[in-house]
Image 1 (spheres, rainbow, N blue to C red):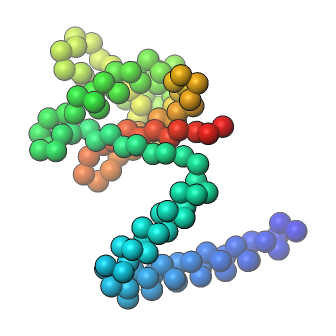
Image 2 (tube, rainbow, N blue to C red; image 1 turned 90 degrees about the vertical axis):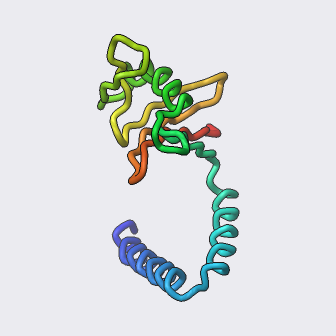
Image 3 (tube, one colour; image 1 turned 45 degrees about the vertical axis):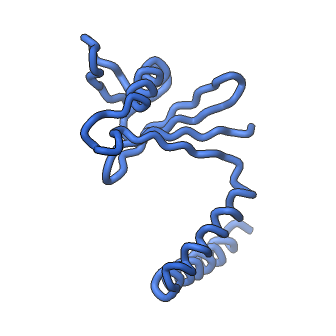
Length: 136
């Protein structure tokens, strides 16, 4: 039963890649923005998580964001006991190193009965922290 599913899955994936390529290549930008907006709305009905991203640097990209630093400090205690890969950070006005999550590491946390999943992701322009609120 499972063995017969793989060829169908490959066909579905190939079809999706084809449609996405045609979509990106031939649809006018304004129409593409509308379709992507509706697609995100549809995905929102079946995807039960909220994602919030915190940038490492302020809008001028010269200073580290205070929010990012506060999250980094908060997560240092969580990540040092729960994460498997850590990175050492020097924090402004601190005389010791702060341990934090390495890139692409994730830590599960609970705040006021809400399950959170913190993830550190390295993006091409800057680093961000994201967390997902789980409904379960």
